[in-house]
Length: 370
Image 1 (cartoon, one colour):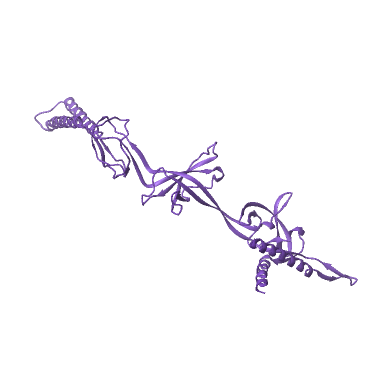
Image 2 (cartoon, rainbow, N blue to C red):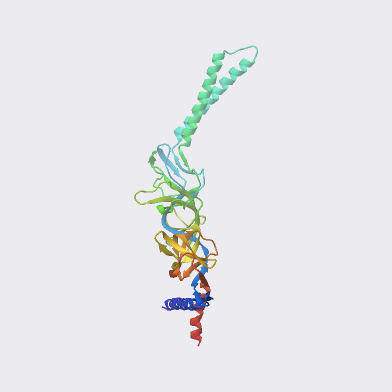
């Protein structure tokens, strides 16, 4: 109520000052016959044009996932003989998580290694014979030995791969999840062993309205807050912006990356995502300065003590002021009070609107002191 009372006092004081200046603004001139003539200049309250940054706040709900997240499956079927992890463990890349029965594969590898050594010795014997002067081995025999050697080497490598498939290793560093596999179980290539998540950072996916198309870009900062702790905010950045708009929701997907160095966040958590978008600097005028005509909005500018009409486009209302676009420059005197009597080129007597406001604010304080 007090605020509205002060606003009323400010408006009333401004009107009184304008009326008083109007009376004082009459200039008396003398005609050819000596008769006094009056020429009027319209009193107006104006303020220098200032610019203001326009920022838009976007809030959305996002769902997180680990920066790397997989489900582990065995590459071969067999019996589980060892489980080397517990749910929640942090494992390093290359660590063995599970072993399958591998006696047959080990024997197959030994047999392939023996055959490789045998073919290697035979080939070396033929090669040495061809290097000597006394004995020469036919070229076809040497070629057959070379082929047998390469075949034995491939068989050895295949046996090595088959043995390696009996061991499930971590492909990257991360935390393992719960497993239902125990020693003695039989598994195949469709059995899920466990999950592995690299949660050193999280990816938060959220939907943005289509009106923000072109305003969001990779590397733009975002603030992510958990629902359980509204005071704890993590700063991240956008890493991906979808190229399509969902025709049902009229929104597009955006993905941000947030650090998780303290390992306090978990994949699958929902977050409140906030972005502040800087849309540039625009001229800011009071709401009473904007007028409407048949061709749209416009403002009056005091230029060389004359009125000039400037067409404008409204951008947005911000805190009781209107951001506009038009042929204006910083420092132009935009008329706020007295626009009802305006016309192009009319003579003006400009009153600084800021001084009027200061006087209006000071008057109640003077009255209260008395």
